[in-house]
Length: 190
Image 1: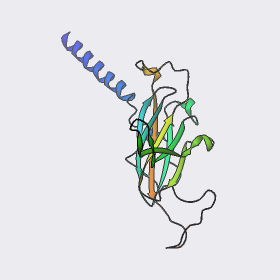
Image 2: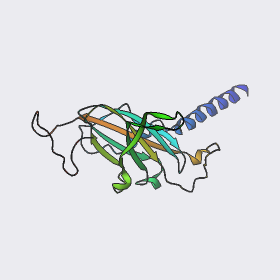
Image 3: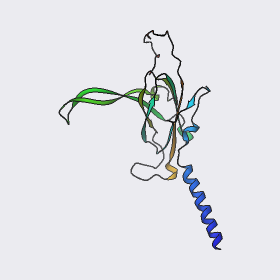
Image 4: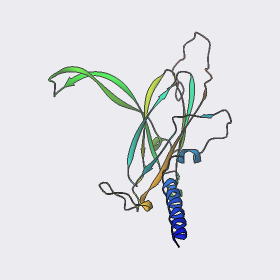
């Protein structure tokens, strides 16, 4: 009898661990659209995380000069296909008056560079880095029927796994070597 109880407890612990791992969301980005071009490599900067409906989270990434990047977004809930809102920012340092210090100083401000709200809610986009810099991706899920709200612990049914797949490949520069690009509509690097 004691052996069967031990086996039952061991089996329960094993199954319980697998259930917890299933909700960890650590590999959700591997399910995102990878595009048809086989030249893209998956970046170690790809992330997956747990969200509740209506939540917004932000991650920072480093993009490198001369590299093309493709960002794709997905969730484990099919109702969210095409509903994930993404905005990309860069930081710039500006000189301005700082009231709490009562003097002029330098502060970092985020500048929006892309939002999929203006791109038919695209769940992926590509950029070409024209310098090494830090960028920020702000990911927002729409409000939904989930009862998981701020200030209370999420239940398993409230958990939405969201993936941010970052892919990269060596960029192809256009134009003449040593020449200068003339600003045109829709062109240029990031």
